[in-house]
Amino acid sequence: MSHSVELQHVGMAFGQTRAVTDVSFTVEGGEFFSILGPSGCGKTTILRMIAGFLQPTEGKVLIGGRDMAGLGPDQRPTAMIFQSLALFPLMPVWENIAFGLEARGVDKATRRAKAEELLRLVALEGFADRMPNELSGGQRQRVAIARALAVEPQVLLLDEPLSALDLKLRQHMRAELRALQKRTGVTFIYITHDQSEALAMSDRVAVMSAGVLQQVGVPRELYDNPATPFVARFVGETNTIEGKVTAIADGMATVECAQGRFTGRAGSGLALGGTCHLYVRPEALNSRAEGANKLTATIERIDFEGAFAMAYGRLENG
Image 1 (cartoon, rainbow, N blue to C red):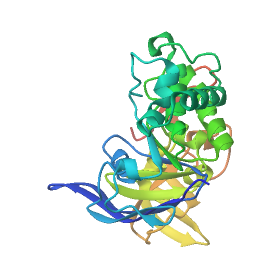
Image 2: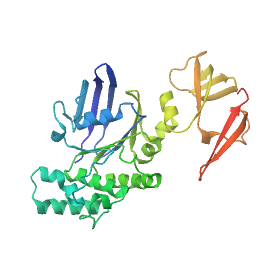
Image 3: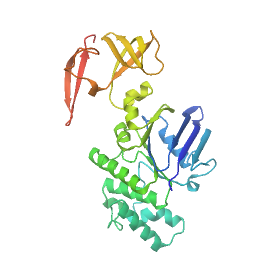
Image 4: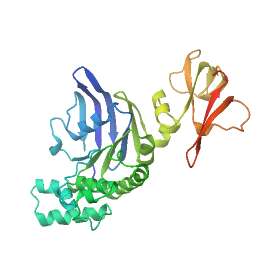
């Protein structure tokens, strides 16, 4: 059975520098859970606390309902895949996969059989005796996953494992990872700064900024109903218009801006007469629409990006 992971008011400080502040969330057993945020937001620190490489300054980390305080990485039911993969270059693939089993005293025949089983699982049957330098980037990635699964972890921790791959391979490996997680049922906690990656792969996503948890939700909820300005800006593209709130009723707010009057869904914390930001997704704009919520802009350039084009315009007030 895969284990749940719970963070209870977890914080981490390095001297005077605070990396994580009062973070609480629960990852259900068997869930694909991503932690999304820009570089330096604290997401890798959280992963290292779950793994046991760091002990939190405050709060608790529970895995399967058990407090992990004082337990090192070798005493936790977790395995971690680093960005660098860290395969042993002088060991064939099967020995790389079985390394953790060898450290536990498992005999060679059993190690080899387990490695072959895992190679079938990650669609690398027949690659057991190849060396890491004979594999492509995506194949090495799958070997690293098989090595992590060899020790039968209840929770697999992945620290931006696809960031070094090219775009096509990254997209392919996203689908592979998702399918593998479903087949194994292991709890995946995945770190990324790529919002499209997080939205495409995850059951739920936690968004981090400057060490603070901004929102946890399913991908569609984060995109359609961001809880904070940071989530609105970071998850997906958006246009931002500043204005003043002139009316709030039935969950909608009217905003007076330099570009005109607009009505949209009211976020939390709005007050009559207060300043606010109106966020508009690019795909919500329609050059042929009539009626309210209308902007006038001059298109200055259009960037062709294959399946779509990105148009950049300047409003009348500059």
